[in-house]
Structure formats: structure tokens, C-alpha cells
Image (cartoon, rainbow, N blue to C red; front, side, top):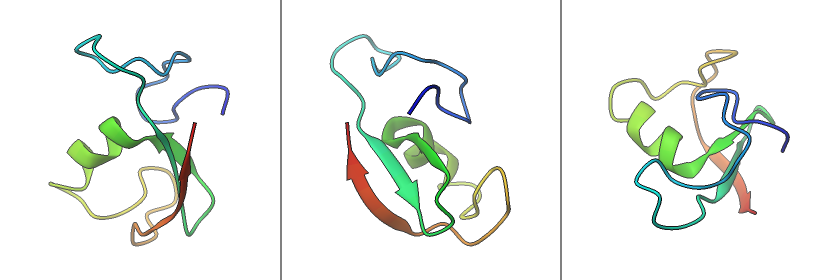
Length: 61
């Protein structure tokens, strides 16, 4: 993953600076930081790019 498509950050450090944030890929194959998407899906359970219902396909670094 080059950059989180939601926050545009290239590093995987969480905003609090504590630990690496895991990358998640949705069923639509768009990838985001898990910490970014966990906040996003509380208000909108759709991919920020394609609006497909968000469901995690895989997780990794």
C-alpha cells in the first residue's frame, strides 16, 4: 500500500503515534489503514471510494 486512500498518509503509524496501523482491503479491493476505516464505518459502512458496502476481505501490513 503506497498511501491510505482515506487519510492520504504513507506511514502506517497510528495518529496517536503508538503503533503501526494494520492495512485492510475491502471486498472491493480498496485498501485503507484499519484505524482510519474503524472510525469511518461507525458513521458510514461503505467504501469511501466506490460506495460498495464495506466488508473486510483481508488484513496485513
